[in-house]
Length: 258
Image (cartoon, rainbow, N blue to C red; front, top):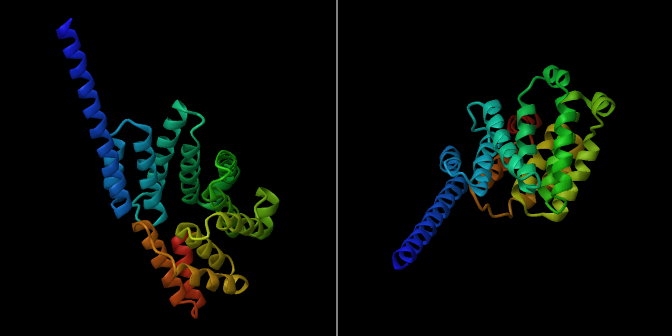
């Protein structure tokens, strides 16, 4: 009896220490993500068979793509999608996984040519995925920014008339969603930065004053991680070249992958 109790206590201690070690590993992966070492963050997180770690792995891949640091955007987007799907297979109601999956699906579609995207009905499929993510994350400003980004990207790539007729996408509706996102998170650097780039890439003349206002606000914000620093830097570069619209628009379109 005594030996049995001793074994049980030892086993519990081992399990406890293992959980602490796993927690430390997740913290290490998160630290790598925060500091901008995205591939390292992915490698650290994917090695842990635990949902929170897998979310970090998917976020690392999405962030690489967003910042233009991916050597293969399509492959990284597919990896992020697979991670999101694996989480949702085990837990269909995992809201954060739905949002990360929608983001990675959008990046996957971004890498396609307009003709391929049209043939595979990617705009409609991505929209449906985003709508699912928005419904599941109704209080998260990022979900509205994602939907706003879909509208503005499709309108820019397909053209105003075609985007509205074929996909129900308009830049105006995209702006509405971005404004909704900013009403919930006015100091979010990622939302502000993406909104700035999309407004300027869409129509510098029409949105010039709004962009300058957003840029002025961006300068007052303090980045909390490497990704935010990079987005703020790109926005600053656009602002510094705003008197040369072609150059500034090129900066915005390069950031967006347009």
